[in-house]
Amino acid sequence: MITLTHGTAAFLKNNGNILLLKRGEHRKIAPGFWSGPGGHFEEHEMDTPFEVIYREIEEETGIIRENIQSIWLAYIIIRRSKDEIRQLYIFFGETSQTDIIQTDEGQLFWIPEAEMMARRYTEVFTAMLEHYMERKPNDRAIYAGVSCNNNGKLKMNWSKCEDFE
Image (cartoon, rainbow, N blue to C red):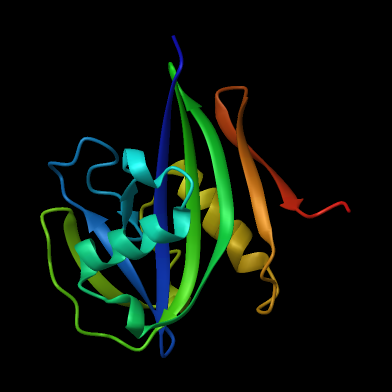
C-alpha cells in the first residue's frame, strides 16, 4: 500500500546569508544532513502550505511571521521512497530577524549564500539547490520536480508550473 507524506522546508536569507539547519544525528530522516528549517503538514493544514511553513519556521527558528519580508513557493518536489510518496513544498524568502533559537531538530547556522553548496544535503535537496542556483535572481516561478531512477542514480525532471489559461 502506498502512503503519502507532505512536508516543507524554507531557505531564508538575510544580508547575503542563508539560514541552514544541520539535522541532528538522532533524526529519523536524513540525520546529519543539511536542510532548511521545515517539517510535516498536520492533518488540518493539508490545503495551506504557507501556513505550514510559517508555523515550522517559528517552531524551529523563533523567527516570527512579521519578520519575514517575503516568502515564495519555489518548488514542489515529488519522490517515491519505497511505499511512500513524499511531496515537498520548498520556499525561499527574506527575513529581517537574525536572532534564532535552537531546538532538538539540529543546529541552525547563518551561512554565506556563496558557501551554501559546500554542505552535505540529501540527493534530492542537492539537485533542487543546484537548479535554484542556475535560476535568474528575479525568477519567482514554481517548479515541479519529479525524482526518477536513472540506473540507480537520482535524476530530477523539472517543469515550470504555469497556468495554461
